[in-house]
Image (cartoon, rainbow, N blue to C red; front, side):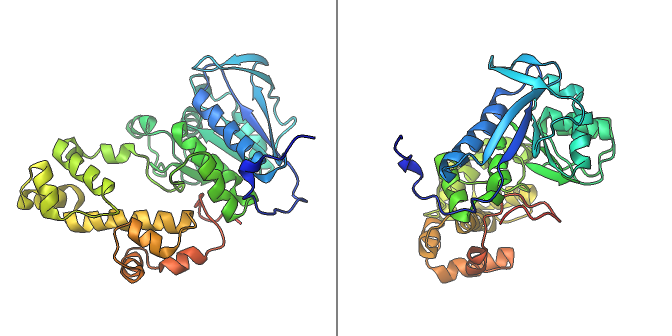
Length: 342
């Protein structure tokens, strides 16, 4: 027998009576190789972490055989036949062919059996277009959001990383697929294991499902000002050792009054409060998604003490750091009405 994989010694005990979960990964010609790799990498890493094959997966497609991705990756896939051989979860990978939506009948069959369906990027766009008026909130990759808004009426379309509507999860996909998959396997892991999974995937933070897609910030006209962009970059890079407003204005060539005016116009906030909010949000991420002592979090986020950080966190989020940390789980998917973490 081979030696156990010591890289995953931190794995805590999990109920070995939990049944294995089968994930169907649906691909079409020109599918996103990045999304597919993200899916399988998270599942394989979780299995190694748990030291058991809790997650297995198979590939399906409309026309069985070899299917090529946009990057030349080849996948041998079985036929997807209506409601035949439905898995515990179905993930439809985005890509050129996904926009046709020929997989929709199978998605509906999964929905009737109350099984989770995940639609990434182009497949999410195809679903939103075909559904016309989804009952709940939906989202897709930011590149398609503008087109959808301009060509139709989608009042429940958001720019979040993912949304859940009656068991169908629509998502931005692309590079955010890793974090989404971590959220989907989280109910089968302990909080420690979720954190360790993120570490092995080299995820500095695990964004929650209701986080805004990065494009939304770049859409703000104020960010076309290179100096404003530099100010925000300085603030984000100096969270642990905050700079004074005078130091920041000197670095970017703003006058204090002009920077105040730009922030008020662009963010309806003062530079100082904006800076503090960046630090408080970083603190929340570290509190909820790491196991660092509170004093280390406070120092890393530029607060002089745990008390100072606690006051700032309470003012921003309505709960104390201790209350955040006392939660028994690391909840990545924040869909209303569905408990997605242990």
